[in-house]
Image (cartoon, rainbow, N blue to C red; front, top):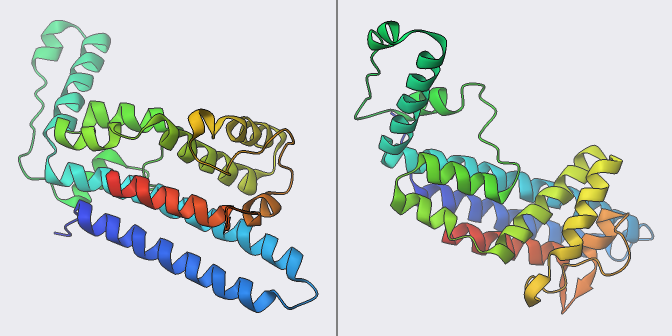
Amino acid sequence: MRKVDRAGVLADFQNSCTDLVARFDRLVASATATTTSDGDISFLATQSFLTLFVSFERFCSDLVLAYMNADFSKYQADLASRIDASIAGKFNSATAALVKFNPKLHVSVSELEELVDPTGWNLTFQTTSKLKEFATKSLIDAHAARINAITLPEGRLIDSARAIRDFIAHQSRGSKARMNDCLSTIEVGGHNNHLGRGVNEVRLVGVYLKAVHGGQMRLHRYSQGLLAIAAGM
């Protein structure tokens, strides 16, 4: 049976993030002296950010599975309750009494993935709030508490990063509007410094991500922010 645990999942994300940023920095250095450096670095920043957030999403999915691998009791209890409610809603009480849910004490990772992620597309959460809701409902309290400890400013950083990823991927008016809405509030309370968009909307994501504030490109600030959040989860 393939084992997953929080430490291994976190280490994988940390390594992939570190490698990504190091590769980005090397390519930026090699492109700086060229006549096409402006556009090249914008492109590199955009594609690197896309990979960065996809890695974070994979981390969240793997982390939830790792926590369930450690203790599956809360999810099974919720699953049994939902199955009972579904049967009761579709059949009479006599029929429902004939159906029995048999929980398992030990569930393999492959069984977990089949139960929790039957489509095989990884677990995805549209917002940080949705992630917290899932954790509260499906994970034992000790594990859910780590995810629910994500602060409001951290949640704004995650949701803003997701909105940027969506705009990069879709280039739609809706995704652009949502991205700019998120970037207009990401610094609320004096947090996530230098990640806000100011009064002007972001139209060119690469230009926004490569912009240097406080001695760092925004891409680096997002990387550091997501790494810090992941370490607390």
